[in-house]
Amino acid sequence: MRALILQAIGGDLLVGDVPEPVPAAGEVMVEMLYAAVNPLDVWVAQGSPGVAAANLPWVPGTEGTGHVDGEPVLVRGAGLGVIRQGTTSERLAVPASAVHQVRSDLDLAQVAGIGVAGGTAWEAVHNKAHVGPQDRVLVLGASGGVGSLAVQLAKACGATVWGQTTNKAKADGIAADRVVVADDTELAAALDGFEPTVVLDGLGGGYTRAAVDVLALAGRLVAYGASAAEQVAFNVRTFYRKGLSMLGYSGLVQSPAENQATIITVLAALADGTLHVPVEIVPLRDAANVHHRILAREVEGKLVVDLRAPA
Image (cartoon, rainbow, N blue to C red; front, side, top):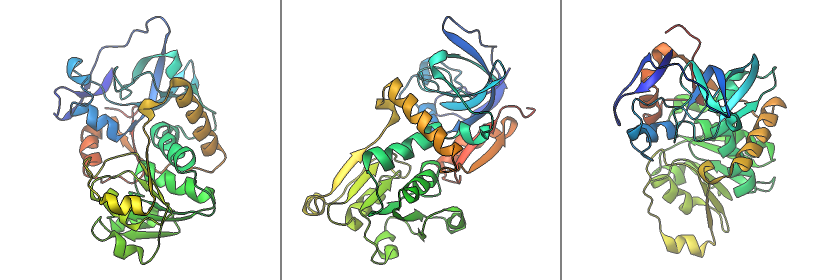
């Protein structure tokens, strides 16, 4: 069967053949339709957390959608794409605990990209920042997979929401009350007096420093990514004098039960129209460059690989 394959850590992806999966006890066979591409897939392919190096060739992918016995499912969890081979293949044998039933009327391309991004956005907005109608929220990287959903969720809470991007061409696709086009050095000036009470930060690096500078007194910063840089330096005196709070979120520290609950919640938000996942669908035959595109921050919303398209 065809799959997206990593042959060497840090190397390029290619589309090739891998052996047919054989379900073990407690596993089910999934006929895959779509696999989402996430920054985590890129970090695994580059050697972190390191499991892929001992299991080459490696199939990336932490989530996707398909059918089990003709019924639509979301595949997410049980270490897929992190400690076991991932979702970017035509068929997949997975633990039953990683299979989540999906309503038949949902768009399975959107569902494929909602587990990681939607779960992160939901937890950041609701369970970390506790966003409410009184808040002024700044979403950094608002055109990305998590950022675009965080904008929608914060607005659904009644907050005033601004989004940040560095790409003017992406600004029109961001559903915020206002969009600023600025890098970390330009952010404070671009906000023009807007003092956020909450900053949702998937970028890190200089953007986190800028967030500390622009946050209002007693503001909250939620960090859930490091697309710009993983090392951060900011003025700690500014931080404590403002009485700021910094919180981190990662789905890797959630229990299986917590992950399951979050998936149920975001699927319900997709079903009732609270969330819309902007997706770009790439056929498997053209998917060898998807990690490069993530690193170059060229993607708006979620990048999803179509595993049904002829390779």
